[in-house]
Length: 362
Image (cartoon, rainbow, N blue to C red; front, top):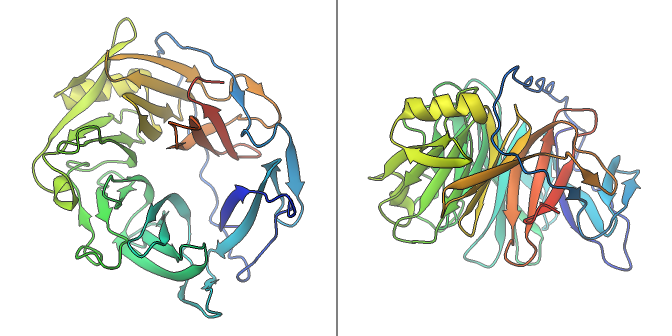
């Protein structure tokens, strides 16, 4: 089923997750076959690192109601089902059914103290978009609404430093849209195409280096066999920074595990084809850029200060229970100063799941 979950640390008196269905499940769209591995892909100086389970527990427990396995110490519950209206805290239901074909998502705070879960719909032929599931500050669902509609194959994306959502279309002329989920914002009802996607492409995910708030740097991946990784340096901060001015360069791997940012799109495309085809999730932290290629099934780690990089095969040496045996998809670096965790979602295979590694690769 297409289902939205929340996952949280289990309380000591309620270790078992509960099922809260919102309606009958809709018929899911068949999952596309994973992209086959290329027959010839170069990889420079890989660094192999073990993976471990989430730190709450080294063992997996089965929730028979949800038919999932989850790390010991966490619980999960269903908050929405595709094709069914959302149950709200006031006892009512949302005015529309929850969207189909859920994909990339993020959580951002609201000015009233609540927060919103923004989620892409990867539907086709102008039926895709972005939707928001709104929560109060105590975690109660208060609203569900559409924030962007009329787009196609909205896959991944990323959050901006000013709490907007950037949603990436994944088709030949796809674009990256900026969506403001804050109801009191003047841009709330006016999503716009950004400068991140240039003339268009099969865009996937976005990460941001906001070290210099006057010139934030956005990195965008493209799910294409020669999809160059883009670097966009904005000329300012806030909504307009993604729509006016800025400079775009492209990632080019060099010999000796080094790289550069080039103004040649062709050089970026050639480098992608040789080293990082079909790039997917991406995350930034502390002068380090992390991104994955689903074709090579590798995590690439770029040191943005000295322009060197390493790589490792995702799930190559798993510690504990669980296995990462298919393609890496979205990744999220969450609270990395304290917990240093990168979360991976897995696409395809017989039991896709969510996995984690720390910043040291342990």
